[in-house]
Image 1 (cartoon, rainbow, N blue to C red):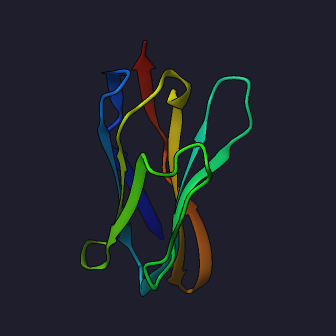
Image 2: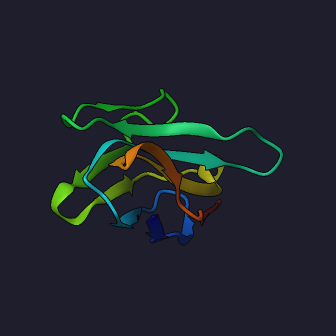
Length: 118
């Protein structure tokens, strides 16, 4: 069994910064791809950042240059540094990890609210 715990969300003014964390624990051999998604009210969940096991990153244009994903393999943790936040970044943010455990499995965090005021 694998558990994910997210932290770091909150309320921030436009132009501000937040750092999200997602720590995995349990029966983990290794973690492949780590992702951050977000979902705003009435909208689809969208992928906002990816980091592979080799450290390659990818972002959609909407957050490129403002968001940075990173990982600490020793701590089984993924981070999302969000700078220059905009009101349209307001959403619930979810981490998603592809974990090598008893097989290859996909896990989601519980979600953390990010609210950006104008």
